[in-house]
Image 1 (cartoon, rainbow, N blue to C red):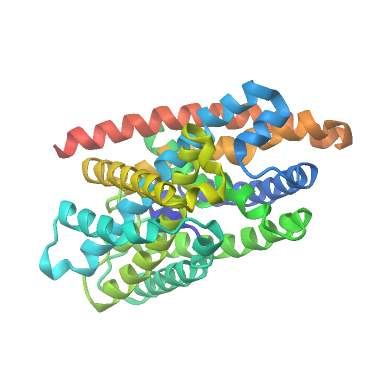
Image 2 (cartoon, rainbow, N blue to C red):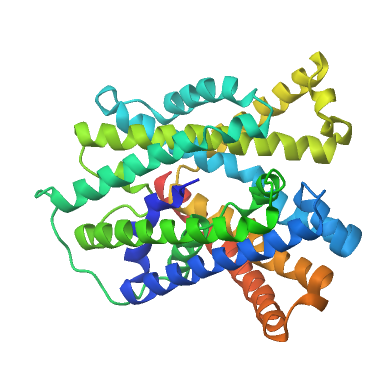
Length: 385
């Protein structure tokens, strides 16, 4: 699905500058392409594997499973938060004339997502991803047009390299990592493909498409807005209120409500997979008690997402924290480790060297990203309260 991280791109460019933002985007695009190769290879080698922890178990036994729990599954726990927060923001912008509060908007999002969350089949849920992609494309096109053509937006200077605080720089880099994320869900999609080995081509095409749009959105946004705006909010929430703003945020809301549905489904599936393995069977979930348990887990996920969104409504920083906790590990470190362990004998020496470099770099960046994101989150919270 086309990335939610698009909405942070002008802020990411502003916090990094042209000479840093564009190369980081290029690296993320190449990383997504190679990540597709790693996942496709694992799916072909382990065709019956559906969940990420099964990959860890196949490669390193109990230790591998624990690595997945500590990174990937922790990320899945937090992913619905960013979509609840963005839905809340977009609703407030669409209803700006009514001055809807964060609590009211968050409550309305909870009411809308609950019946959608009751749908259990990932195949049924994934079918709406196309609508979400169309919604985000509408928002991005509208935002880009508005940024470029509206005369009342005052131009401010841009920088080749922005010399800001280290925490701010890392948050921007982690936001860009998030824009190329989603690998936590890839195994569930790959196992539904007729030819899993072809997944790398799908990842490559998607990476190229996303990169073109990301560069356009980030460049136009940064050129028009400069560095004088609220970096913690989506770009669609900082532009002047008018009919275009409503169209933009309607597109964002459509994208995020369906993405929320998908991620909430993955969230519930993961929770049940860990705490109630007997519920892994679809027949068990189809019973009356199974549906009731699923609904209870969904309620917990929505309540958690609502609470975090209201207390920490800092879109960009929350996104960076999620990327730091598990997106780097899910996309790069863990797939590289699993490939080396299970398929290292088939890999050329140069590729094994690449994997040995990817693993520590990803883990160090992840640790730094968690620290900087939490520090920024606490700073913003106390500053606004």
